[in-house]
Each structure stands twice: as structure tokens, then as C-alpha cells.
Length: 388
Ligand SMILES: [Zn+2]
Image (cartoon, rainbow, N blue to C red; front, top):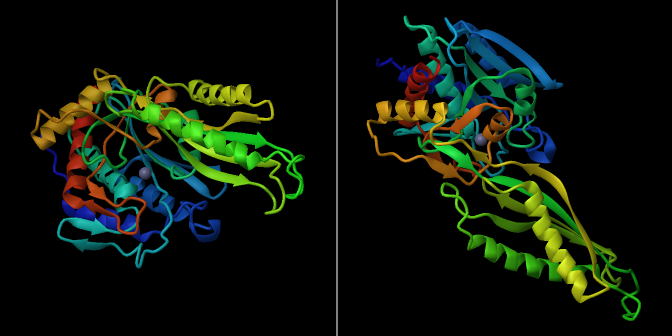
């Protein structure tokens, strides 16, 4: 059954969304982004207008999540569509909130990441709400805050709402993503002994000791890149993100601190990633009794892996095949992390599917409008397959 996705409406909704500055408060200039209040009001109004039951609540003051419910007519499976309303900052952009169209491309901050996905959800929800054949299961549309920083929106959402399956409409070039990497931030501290630079017999240089750690991490990174990894996301990786050590040029550094990032693949645990680093520190200590260091987890997010035969993957694949008329499109994986992993952790089988475009997090971000309309159509078809 072909639904009529209204292309003009998609462009109008997306243009409205991009015009609202919703820079994540933590990511704006001087840590003062506009936040999600205004866009949440717009989304809630749009949901009311479609006829959804709307809840609007603030997991932290001034930062509202919005959830719209299209009640199913029976006991079918429930489905959630999830989009974040915040964007990254706009440094270096001329007119980030003035969307401009060139051919099929719409340019502006958030067009691809991920107001395109949110616009597709709102228009698809309208098509389903106005349809003569209602879904048997509930459909939830969740517009959440803060994905670009700490994901407090989806963390609060999973405490309040549960669905059997979910689709996160982050940009994937209309490919079905059912696996992505996780990440682990590990804090490593080397300890030396402060002494005046003129007294080498007394000083122990924590910065030099961190140099040894960095050299071993580089080796470890090379060996990670040679691993087979995961069939959809490839090999794990690491990098030395932030480094800080010492107090003055003529003082032996007493401490040096590294916050490194390890990108994990499905099947790897946070503890394994930490143990690899601790092993490396132990071997450095075995070589030099003056070497003193420790490592601990600062922050971690799990990878995503949804089985190929999960009902949400099957339904989304059917929707995609129907709309794109291409049976050969393979499932794929993504290297970036998304809120899909939090939904999966909460027991909701989840995939990621979003529009085509480029330039996310750069000064020239755009989305392909035709792909946003196709995404809306896939969402409609997938809901029909899944919510039975
Ligand atoms: Zn995003």
C-alpha cells in the first residue's frame, strides 16, 4: 500500500526545524548553546496538530524531551522512532540557521544530523495518523535532548517509556545500520617526583614516563587495527585524545595525565579495554621500578549489535526494499556511536536508518531532500510491517 508522503510538507517542516537554533548548551560558543526548549515546543505543537497524545517533560531543567503517542488499535508490537533535537556548534558557519536549497540539497546546521530524520518522522506519523488502516501496535515518536553531549535525553526516556522495537533516524545514507562501535574513555596517570631541573638525581619525570605509555599505546593501536574485528564495523581503534603534564619548564613533572579513547566493537567489553591498558602499564613497571602509573574508566558507551533476524531488522529491510526497489542492499555498520545503544541496553531491539547527505559536524552540512522523503516512506512501511 503506497502512502502519499507530502514532499512539500517535509521541506517546510525541515526548514522550520533548522531555523530554530538548538545548539547543545555544552557545545555552543563559551558553553552557551541555545538548547532544546524552543525546538521542543515546535515539535510538541506539530505532534498535537497530527493528533498524537503528547508528553513534554524536562529530564533536567530547561531541556525538554517530547514524546508523541499514536495509540494502536490492538495488541501489536510497539515501535519507537527516536531523534535528538540538539545540534553541535556552528563555529565558522555564515548562516547556520538559514537553510538554503540548491537542487535537491538543503544546507544548514542540523539538516542531516538530525533534523532531516526528525522531519521524516513527523511527516510519516501524520501519514499513519490520517490513514484508514490503523496500526495494531503503539507508535511512539521520541524527540530527545542532548545526544551530542551526554545523551541525558535518551537516558531519561528509557526510564519512562518502553517499546518492543526502535529506529533511530541518525544519518546513514538510507542504509540499514544494525551494529555500531562503542567507546571507552580511559584516564591514565603517571606519577614522578618533582625536583628542580638542576637536580637530575632527585627528579623522576612523569612526562617522560607517559612517553613510554604513548609508545606502547601506539603499538597496541597498530595491533588493534590488524584484528579481524566485527563483520559490520571492522576493527577497534584507540587514540590519545587529551594530554596534560608538568607544572613549569624547570621542574621535573610530578604528574602526567592522559585521557585516551578506545573505540570498541560488538563483543568487546569495557573491562577488556581497560585490562589491555593495565597490562601494558604492568609490563612497563616490570622494566623499571621507578615507573608508577594507574588507569581507570572515565566514561563508556557500549557498542550496538542487533541480530540480522531480529523482527525490527526484518521489518525495516522490508520497508527499505519496498521504497528503494532494491533487494540487494546489504545491512551495514557504522563507526560512530548513537543513542540506539542505550535503547538496546534497555531491552528494545533497535536499528539506525537515516537520510543521505554530508558534512555533519562541519561548516557545510547538507541533506538530500529526496532521501528524507524516502526515509519517511520507509518509516511508514516499516511500522506497517512491525506493529502487527
Ligand atoms: Zn546525530
